[in-house]
Amino acid sequence: MSAGNFLSQLDEGLSSLLGQWNSYSTGMVTLLVVILTYSIMTRVEPDIHPMLLARQAQGSSVRQEGESPIYRGHSAPHSLPLNSGLNVKDAGASKWAPGRDGDLRDVWRKVISGAAPADGPSGKGRIFTVLGSEKVLEHKLDDITRQINLVGQHIASQGGSKVAIYLPNSVEFIATLFACSFYNLTAILLPFDEPEDVIISMLQRSNADTVVTAPGAFPFDSVVKSYPSLRQLIWVVDEGSKHMDWNEVPKGMGGSINVSTWQDILHDNPVAAGTELPAADSSSEVKDVIVFWRSEPGTLEEMVRFTHGNLVSAISAQLTAVPAKERFSLADLFLPAASLSSSFTLVLTLAALYSNASVAFNSVAGTSPDLILATTGIAPTIIVATPETLKKTHEETKAKIGSLLTRLSHWVQTRSLVQNGAMPVASFLASYNDSIRPRIGSNIVPAAPAPGKLRLIYVAHPAGVKGAAAPPLLSEATISDLRVFTGARVIYALAAARCAGAVTQTQFHDYRVAGDGTGSHFGPPLSSTEILLRDSGAHKISDDNYTGEIVVRGPAVVGGEAALGVIGTMREDNVLAYA
Image 1: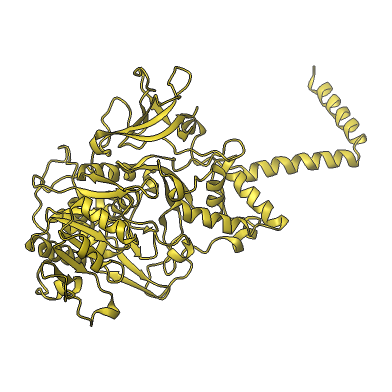
Image 2 (image 1 turned 135 degrees about the horizontal axis):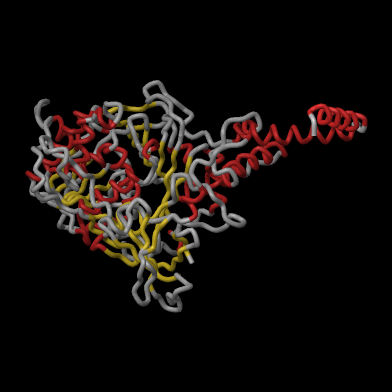
């Protein structure tokens, strides 16, 4: 065909098309252009490739009779050992030499040495105490080091060896824990705000000889009468009560108990005393940390003895459980809004300290289900909360979604998470829900750290807790709503009595909601644990059915292995869920 004939036919075709053009043709073309433009303009890349969420753990190639394959997360393949520690490099050691696992003493040494330039921006994190909505105190790291030394020396000089810490979340709580680590004392973490009989029971079972506590919270008279083995009591007195004499032992109690106050221990020593930590000695002994775990009301608490190896393994696993660019850093303000007597909260707090993030302590944390109250006065970027707290926050916020526009806004943001795999971005439609969002950390006082944007929320479900003490199980739909309401990613973990930190936890970028969203899962194992399912009662393991009692193994587990006493199953995407 010649060029002339081709152009002639093209001209005839265009003339015929334009001759038949009408309003319907205009409408159809316009609609097509709008659809293509909208698809291009609103297209977003998922935060993680979907294939990485399709198989989140790897099962072993063989399994034992009555057991499922052993599952590990992709960060700890079967060909390598599980993560056992912090890989601490001593000064002067070759950069090619393997590092030590370390212990809790290395955590505080990292706090006072600060972030190395090789790890990114150099500097030191800050530590705060939040007192109500109008006062935030910053503590100098050197002052806390002095408290660690002087309190540790005082307890050791008085013959103490087993120290019960009965305090709300506070600087004194964490300082006492480190004092026990540096001065070879056993730390006993007692859940705060417990009945008298429970406190006495925990002291008797742990054989504590020293208690560090706050006036008004500790039943001194009852404990002295029922527990004669107590030898030391250290009161942590607030500013308004310092003028009172707290060293006097009530009449009839005998003189066998040495009563002192935290403030007197510090003031009775020279200002220059205790400013230097004991010399680093990786061969010296460090005592265990005892934690109590109650599975059911009316039963005795399970007393769990964690070694420092268990704890540093769990700390290291949390440090590597999130993508490198999202890890704890100097730019973060970390708030434990759950009790530090829980190993999950404690491990994450120690991980934040080791990462040189700033940390804020609030005595409200762990005792109130109100997340807004727990964050008053500061704007944290990372929070550890309880399931009860998040459940209450979700219910209160969702009840405010009433109008058509707010429902549409919520639907669009949920679709971004579930369908597109990306966190919702600010938009005109999304702004309709700004007024109903929970005001987390919105009340900034002059002395508080610079405001931050909440980016990460941790929450753990305790395995095997029954009865009235059982927390709510957060569904996938609830967690998705919380991501929309708070603008932060939510990591949901499964915690257990004999496992430091978490057994498993959801991945940082896992926003999926299966089916109607009523189901729930706990993600894959961390790099410090591996899990399997074992025959239990009517649940028998077979080649096509992996449902049985959850068993966790690894360096973060007391004794190396623990059965959780609950029935679980591995879903098709290799994440752990309750059966």
